[in-house]
Structures are given as structure tokens and as C-alpha cells.
Image (cartoon, rainbow, N blue to C red; front, top):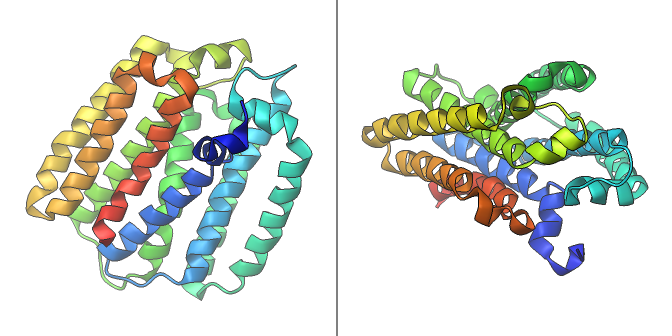
Length: 269
């Protein structure tokens, strides 16, 4: 595969689309909560998300004996030193930017950073809970800038939206693990699907998706745009799940799965 020849696939392998989706989602929550999020908070979020995902990929690449089967891990093996250098630069830049954040964001970010560090240390022991915890950390990181800036108490509808976003992120990761099942078994990587099997994982994703779609329709009276956003995100993810055979080629499932986090940008129009 010639990575630079397929720009979006190259971006996906480096998790840059995940970073962009996180920023778009953070702006969505800022608009939803009617707050202005400082640019420094968004830059710090982008760097932090990329650092977390890249550390995870580099660790997996190191743990895999021989040449990895997946494009992502093979790429991280091949360009390990270059990516590691970029990771160090990103960490330094993020550390500098942290001191420019508003105090409320800084305190919450330090707490979340500590939780992330604990996760990275305990990751090997989490096994089938890996996707759950990554979805938690991703969702908290995306919502954090808006949550700490808002000055009023959030009611139940906003809590529902937060839970729906977490479930969407969890579904996204579970679908990826389902697609990677054979490779994970081959490389002895742990995930929800290696613990419970493809059938149980598929049924669990379907249940989460259907619940999220039904509750998304319930948001119609609150804000039509928000309802459309979550119904669309979950319909696309269920489509990625159901059309597994067709989307497995060229990692199209990852491209679509990560692209759903650009959909909240509709709220910004």
C-alpha cells in the first residue's frame, strides 16, 4: 500500500481523522452548552487525543511479534522511530499549551490526564474492558472544555446527550474490534470480542445502536438537529456493522466509522 497515494487512508492510519472528529465534537458540545471554548483548549484536546491513540498504536506495534497483519500496526512498526519523535514533540507542545489554559480547564485537564496515565499503565490488565474505558476517556475529553466553561446546571436532557455520545464512541470501538477479531487472535491482543466472541459482540452492538436510535428520536422535541445527528451517527455505524464483508476491503470500515464524528458539525452550520 502506498500511504501518501491515498491521503485519507494515510490520515486514518495516523489517527488524524480521530483528532479532527474530537475537535468537531468538542465544538458541538460548546455550541450545545452555549459557551465559548478557548482555542488553546481545542489545540490541547487535539494533541492529547493524538498522543493517547499513538501511544496505544506504538505499544501494540511493539507487542506484535514479527510483521503485523494490519496496515495500521505495520505502518507503526515500519516508521516507529519517526512516529515516536513526533509523539515526543506533541507531548512537549501539549505541556507548554497546558499552562496557557484557563484555570478551570487546567484543573479538570490535569485530573483527566492523571486518569489517562492510569489507563495507559493498566491497559494490559483491562482486556475486554479496553473499548469501554477508551470510549469513556474519549467522551470525557471531548466534553471537558465545554463542561468546565458552562455556568449553569445541566438538566436531564444534556445528560442523555452525553450518554448517547459515549455509547456511540463505544459502538465505534467495538465495531473496529469485531473487524480486527482474526488479527487480534493471531497477535494475542485482548478485546471485548476476543473475550465474548463475534456473535455476542455483534448482538451487543445492535442492541446499543437500536437503543441509541430510539432515544435519539426522543430528542426530536428538544432539538431536531441533535436528534438527526445522533440517529445518523448510529445508523451509519450499524451499516458499518451489517455490511462487514463489503467494507472490510481497504479498511473502509475505519474510514466510515471514524468519519461519523464529523456529523456533529451539522450543529455548527
